[in-house]
Image 1 (cartoon, rainbow, N blue to C red):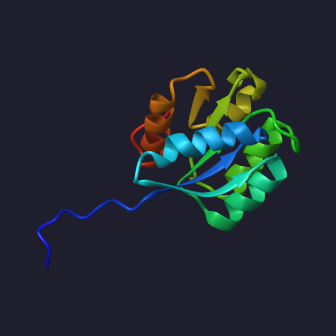
Image 2 (image 1 turned 90 degrees about the vertical axis):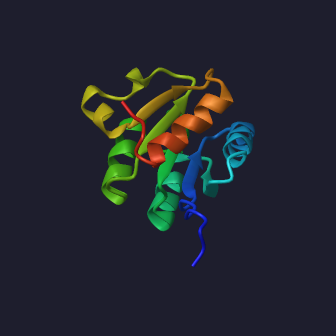
Length: 133
């Protein structure tokens, strides 16, 4: 038996953004934390939904403005597909794009202008149950 404390399981993330450059930047920021694994990436809402269903991640990072279903429909479908999976919206648009009844499905909204270190910290915190609004 080892005296070393057990390392927590890595946080499994699905990234969904239609801009490949933004996904690459997010991936880079997240992978700077050795406790994070990006299990899949999507460039539209339909693909994001399928990947969430397939991978059952610890957290989904979701752009609000992508091709595919409107944000309200996508959030509802994700919540039904993978109940309990936190959804972090990461968008250049305000969370008001989401209908008031659907805001309960968003664990945390992070503006794209947020410092990347804080983005990483927030996403990992939400996945581990330490954050959210």
